[in-house]
Image 1: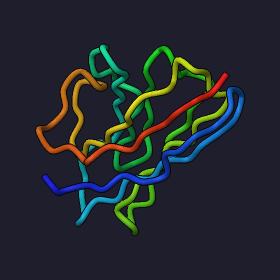
Image 2: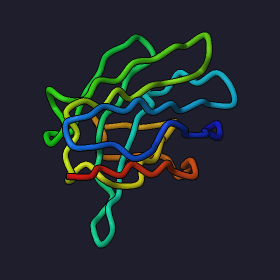
Image 3: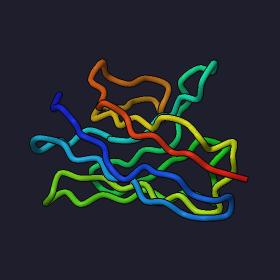
Amino acid sequence: QVPVVESGGGLVQAGGSLRLSCAASGANRHDMGWYRQAPGKKREFVAAISWSGITYFGNSVKGRFDISRDNAKNTIYLQMNNLTPEDAAIYYCNPDITERGVYASGVWGQGTQVTVTS
């Protein structure tokens, strides 16, 4: 399990878009992906992608978010479109996700804040 570093969060108006990046420190053939946690709420699965590019998403973001992967750069990307205030949270990357997001390794990035204004 390799450490990861997230980037790309920020402030955006509702309806806007942001792209998050997660860079792993080395090659990683596991499914990688994103979770988010809003204040007072449990951590929620957002999206993940396999080494071969198979993707899966949490129900709350289907049709609005996309995830991609550049294996040469050991990096995944989360493209977030049509953002709503309910998407505001700290977004965390995980380098080893299984069972379509049910389980994640104990390795987490520091998180990146996404704020959505109405």
